[in-house]
Image (cartoon, rainbow, N blue to C red):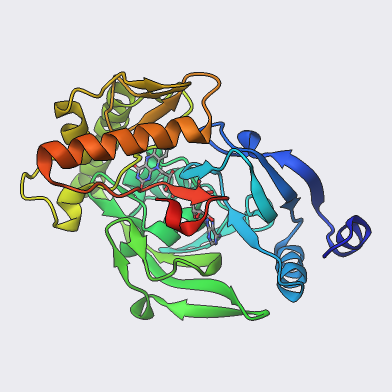
Length: 311
Ligand SMILES: Cc1cc2nc3c(=O)[nH]c(=O)nc-3n(C[C@H](O)[C@H](O)[C@H](O)COP(=O)(O)OP(=O)(O)OC[C@H]3O[C@@H](n4cnc5c(N)ncnc54)[C@H](O)[C@@H]3O)c2cc1C
């Protein structure tokens, strides 16, 4: 057990009791976290983890909550926000050093403005560097893992640097799952002349494509399912979205959750959706795609507050 007094004495940043996770996820869904902690700096964040570890209480780091579905009954233990504590970065020549809480979109913009290529196509991903590194986020032919040179993790009370050569990055996954990521180093390439112009025009195209094909103005968590075509277990060659569309599921509603009319692999919260509504849609979709294509869709979003065996 931890008393409120002890928490307030140990942690310099903000500690909220029973904070609704709706405020901290792009889907705007989820019950309350027992303890919601926004540490002040890296030391404060490590001290928070260490306190929860010492009492054998669960804790979870979150970035911007853009790849998360949080249980309607909330999250036990601590939810620890990285945005402030791990929010600093530096760009020197073609090397970037950044905290896990740094916005990926901002980093993609800043590095491209510094005429550096390697993560410029990730501009439309609304999460943090930490969330991106853990799941090897990617878009339009680029993945963050290709630029990573090292990752700093918190491990058994200390920070430790893992070189990229010891990390496996795959399609929307990495061997870092389960680690607490504090920051990362990236190596980018100097861009000039025709290469720079080409990347600039590809960025504009990607921006327009995203705006035209995704419900950016409604609460969602990006792609709900991994693309089986990328994992090599789908001979039809169709994406998850194309299969869901072929099953005629666009626009399908369960409670306040709806399969987007614009992009079949996105579920939107139309107002008062619950996590149960989203999971009902997930279950219905998985069933229909299995029956029509013999392909078992897997979740890309991460579940928080659920038993691991639920999905
Ligand atoms: C409109 C929209 C578009 C999107 N487009 C894309 C896209 O094109 N490509 C793509 O790959 N993704 C996309 N996403 C999904 C999402 O933005 C990415 O997965 C992003 O990398 C998640 O970062 P986050 O900080 O929001 O992570 P969160 O959602 O906060 O967390 C995701 C998972 O990572 C863990 N985590 C986060 N930070 C840390 C840390 N420091 N240490 C340990 N664990 C951590 C969390 O516990 C959780 O399990 C999109 C999402 C939205 C809403």
